[in-house]
Length: 241
Image 1: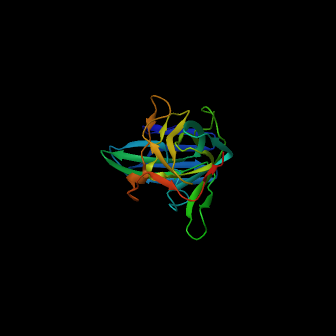
Image 2 (image 1 turned 180 degrees about the horizontal axis):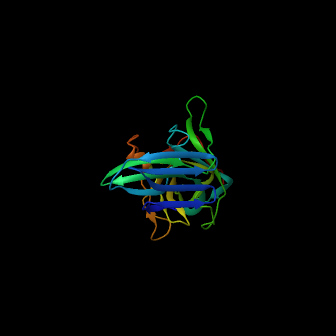
Image 3 (image 1 turned 60 degrees about the vertical axis):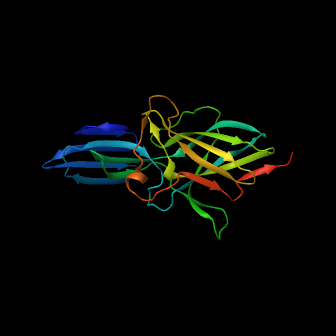
């Protein structure tokens, strides 16, 4: 389903149905996702049509750019060490056209549950999109039209043990890569000298030969983000030896 398409097309995948066909002088786009239906007539010429996984921050509306992933089990990292774990993350799916360098978003839909939480104190906390994930030691099998896999490299350069139960990311820095079998992100977390950490994304696929998705936050010009998030509210807790 993901990638560039030529119309007319019909896509029928479990809970998602998409049809693109000529309708007099227009191109009719029809989509069903669960019980949500959408029909649009597109008056376009010489435009390419894409369906791709994108940042999971656009639905139900652009409320926040932060994604909080809670670990199903907390993890402990010994001093002066680095590990790589694998987490799931929610995805949204965008249909868009592209002509030269101009991007026009037609539709965004998702099979993932939409939930929010507050990171930090009620007075000065940060609103985040919420997702809970198991922690894996290798890439697990997933439903690629509902969730993706994040490879998270964690570096603890400190002299104390570190306990981590969740991670917060700035979605402006997301670099999503995909095939029809896998949607992926590669991220890193550096535990800092104290009770905080810095997270960011890397611009590379989790496996070779994956296609890169269009960054919808950038194409929509919503904001200029650094692509980093500093976790300052104690989600990385140091343990005494």
